[in-house]
Image (cartoon, rainbow, N blue to C red; front, side):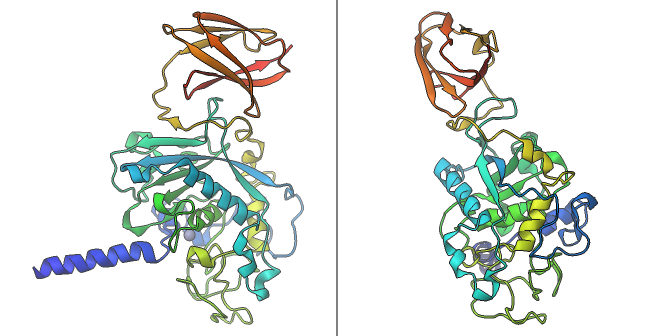
Length: 409
Ligand SMILES: [Zn+2]
């Protein structure tokens, strides 16, 4: 009986810990990779590294100044239905990221006056992908049922063979996996320069989006993507450590809960700790900023020769928004054949299945329906003479799949 009581107390403490403080496993994860140094000693490679620490108020030459748009794929792994998070929850998270990385977050006004001039619009935005690695339209959301109860930081969640879902091309997408994580971990991230098939961030399903509670404002994803973009914890992962950024003051250790006023440590007067920084461990509702130095460090990765430069030429986030893709590992092969492609004026559609074929809809690259037809024969000849040159997509009936063709004459 006593043993059971102890076990219950242990379980209670464990569960309590799981939801009362931020547990970011990035440091532990990177250490576990063995081949890489811990996150605290990772630096960008020479091509992206200015000499010494990055001053917060200067801009290195060559850093692209335009808004950087990153196509995102969200791999939803679920064992229980509650883990199969809704498209609305996912879109809410993308919205939060866009606000946090553009300093359009409503709580930006809560940044203390002493730090307000250091707060940055990182000019980075995120879009759910509209085109998958095969060039097919997608919602940017992949759902997969798994037999795994809890995922650890061993990256099984990133492998279809191991019960997770394979990464999409890391040069073209930010991969985000959501699922149930063991040990109270809210999330972890790979760092720039790691293995492409492990590249991305992993977020516990119930802190992804606007879910409520201490970590229910979507800042776990903001924090982990900060790591993915090369940022370190603000206290440098060691007592009064250095995060490699000049405009973040030193602090003795991670902040917890929701501090207020000046929290002095490590001679960080006059402002004290920057506990409202997204790279601290403060509760979601009490974080609200990246600094100019952090923004610059992230953006340097997109510079010529930088480890995230390839993403700048990814066009996977333009085009037609679709419903969720259900298990792309099992598409029905050869549902239709579409020829000639590019089309000059007549598009032929051959159905490999029996009738009825139903309606087809043709969308332009903006996702606007430009043609709708009822198909009654196994080979249909569709006039496309009225379509301007460009990329189009054909969707058949209620199928989640769509087929791309090009008009060129
Ligand atoms: Zn972290």
